[in-house]
Image (tube, rainbow, N blue to C red; front, side, top):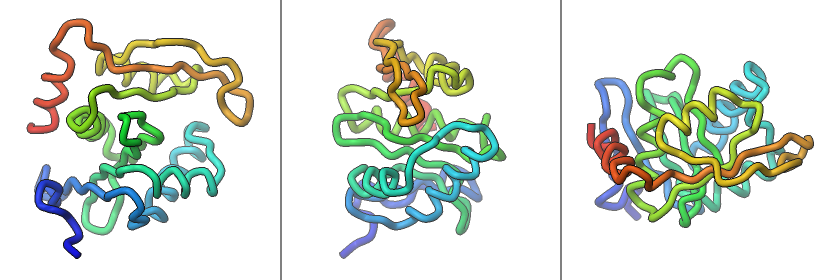
Length: 171
């Protein structure tokens, strides 16, 4: 079995970082993804999920990730309908376009891209809005700890959002 079917071979995006797609059901790098998510949770108080939920969601999702050698730079776990379950980029790699490229990879494969973002996570909300996501609705008590969320969808408004994300992915 080929690890990366033809259209999904690792893509080098810089001299140090490669983009990889992990198919559904493959738990390769689940430990590294969990460790990255936990590092962000501890530092920023976001991405709070139970381990069992994370593991199940990871295995059911298609994982787009960036790796620098043996280290996980960032990842997006997305369902086949374009719903982003998790999006995480290591703090030391933020501001370099990795989050945008992860969303672009999901957008390239799906008709719509949606997610929930914690209502108090201004950084995430700003990031998604910058990409053209629109708030569809406020969901009170969405998170296990009682926290509210916004359900967001990548907007179709100006007709250029998908093209811009595609350009980011190709870039």
